[in-house]
Length: 365
Ligand SMILES: Cc1ncc(COP(=O)(O)O)c(C=O)c1O
Image 1 (cartoon, protein in one colour):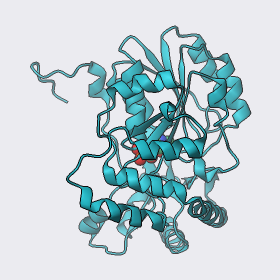
Image 2: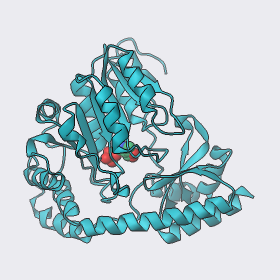
Image 3: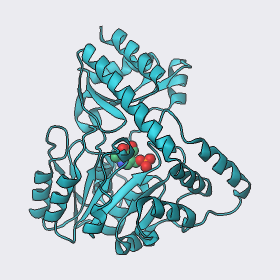
């Protein structure tokens, strides 16, 4: 990119940020290829949509759109506090959990500091480091997951680490760390280093429960979202749970109305329907097992996943991805993560998954 001397960004590292590649929208593929029955398995959205109670809650708020939302998110925070058994002052609301990740970096990381994250972990962690002009320390992955021993060493061997990001389950690899592994890691990390466990996909791993770690470690931040299992990606709501002092700092830089009125009402309704979440988990589990069998039959390797997507080794992923798109199937190539041979495929509804497998059969011959 050509540099304009008058308009330089705050930090040179901003120029090395690749704008975030979102999954191709269905409408765009329809326009490009003239296909109308597009299947999108690219952004780990919930193919079952959201709880019916959400629609009702949204409708009730439509007459109030001329009014600003409650900037404190009182009712939603109360509902999250009840659900997670924390105090309201331990909660920060975000415009999606990306907003939370961004706020954590802006609140705590300067250009003299460093952020530690794993190779093959969610790409936003390296983006926020560059955004702050901070050093991003990428620790090589172990069997496609976080190598917590190596991450601990990276923290201990660099004085200026302020934040560690851990995605659990990890995107895009789908790996999961146990609570015991995380506890052992936290015990070795100095108290002035914040450890962020990004639980965007945690509802797909109901056996996993790291909430208790919050009471043990003051430096821990758990980040969650309504975009995945709750099916509200289009509304943008996420939240952080952490100790009240850390939350108070993050809240100082939060935009006053970062979660819209409709989004707050929808998230509250979504949280109250845990039976829906159980159906989502179960369907995801069944469909993931079915997909795994099909990948085996196709001779494709994949990483066992604890989330709602599978990372599959297809050889020349760029070509396979292009051919899938031409037939109306959108998945996610992972070259941006240095995984040129892999695709990340979101678990869809049974009919989506059948279409994916049929299309893969025709593309791979
Ligand atoms: C690990 C992880 N964290 C955070 C996010 C951000 O999601 P949102 O901003 O929609 O909450 C994503 C989205 O893909 C993700 O995969």
